[in-house]
Image (cartoon, rainbow, N blue to C red; front, side):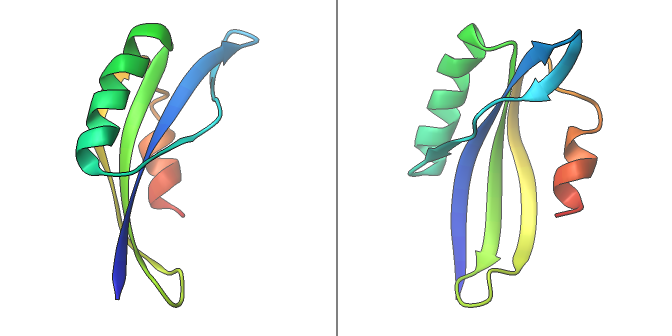
Length: 83
């Protein structure tokens, strides 16, 4: 059985480079999108991410960026697709 997970990936500048900050889990897609908008006002950048994974094996079936706010490193989507 597949399980949907939503999280926000904020970004901050460290040594003049955008780096990921602490991930924030969200309960639902609606919650993730709302929190992404809110966090996008205070963080330098935030990506709202939806992951579909197998409940038993943990194998990822798909990863999608649902929304972007502010500055997000160009390589971010490539990196998460490689998971």
